[in-house]
Image (cartoon, rainbow over all chains, first blue to last red; front, side):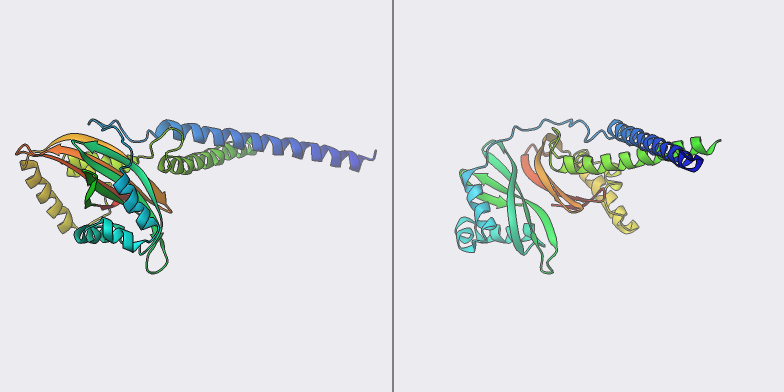
Length: 146
Length: 137
């Protein structure tokens, strides 16, 4: 083997070793960054107040949200009063084109239910938005929209 | 210091920074979607609710969009008046939320007793963006 070929082979070997070492050091750093973040990010603090247990979605609320998601104004008009429809319009702003509605949770206190939803959709200019609204339900009737 | 050592330290530091950023990004997505055992509640939203229930404007200042001096003074007047009306928080329940792009929604159910002894039970939906509560209703 010529001396030039031997030198080239040795140089390639050193370059590979250096590349592996660099990658290993980078990996160690990456891991250290993840560990530091997990130690410093503590999430929400302790809730000092009692939390109510979650309950199932009331049927009347499900009917309302199904109508919203299906863009079914006829059914919605039968399920909600005029004031409630106005409140719903306010809660959905700026969404004008609903693309989906998702039940996120419900609680009950002394027969009064609060049923929460998120709605995704587009505004007048086509921008994507997400909003949240809550149906108040009592005696199997929607009594308010927030 | 030899170039080998400075190069190695630099590589580790770049890796650490990237690891921290990736972890933060993944953490936000996991938190917003309730993955990894979390319920999706945002620390910013929780702090906001604590500030409201404890009637502490100091807790709210850092997690609201920057406002002019007149608005801040009005808010302090309002909180001073509301401190005079004694309320007792009875419960605070995180109902859930969702996210899209840089926005996340967090919905709470609040139970409280007013100074006149009347119990109230109402929801509050918060919109959080860039670490601030930009909408509360």
